[in-house]
Length: 389
Image (tube, rainbow, N blue to C red; front, side):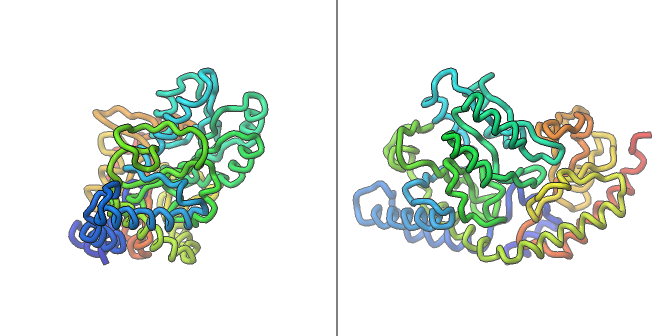
């Protein structure tokens, strides 16, 4: 397996799948086969181009089938960041100039920063509770009082793994006749994609679940005006200019299909995560699990670690010891930049440098979780002198 090769060659315990996952063998095979077989530009009128176009449309139909939407609702993009920016760009150019939009306070920066760029003070942040769940009562009242032009709430959070009630949100917005935009990047490939396409706008990408970088998609309504972010060609029914990434699209679909075949194992994977949490909190009682009371992705643990000096922060120490994890904040030259997600959940800015995110993948084993725990314990011993008195 490619994952075994990745571990041996790099000699690391990899727990940063929410950032990017090692390439899945199915994605590699699909990409290589497509790159060799479909050499033409899918927009070209000759037979070679037609074959590439047919392969691209077949991939579109397969993805639409998984999402429970129609093929012509799927637009290929370079990734989720482009797709998220496309949604906000579209509404900035189609809504009235004074229309507000509602965006959850824990969205990915590609949504929050794009929203701020296009809408400024017309962005209404949907508050979340201590667990990171959006306030449905607040949104319900907002839909009645202001009737925003768009509601944007992700399916699952990239930092905490907390799952939002996206199906209920879609129903609320549908009743209010307000478009609902769901960033499904972390959801897809970990939970069932069936029904996600019922949301008005959905974005996703390949590399978070073992596909190649540089390919993603936007699911959008098939009718009505559409204001593209990119110009220069009629591709994607004039919704996204540029030569389509045929090999990437086929690899994306192959990866998602491979992940969907494993969904019966979700509960077993969740038990691996929970056993790790139980042992971790027993070893280090001062740890707080972020979003512990909410339903979370089976692969994600966000933990508030014991306080250490920022220059020797946990993520750096673990990296030196061979465990690749992520953090909920930026730390540079002794300065901490608090995570907007944690701030929205009510955590103090000073906690930012103490949050670690452990995100596993489908290939992660119980032995890998055990190795991570051993490494964390070693890091704790070595960091102990720098714990604030």
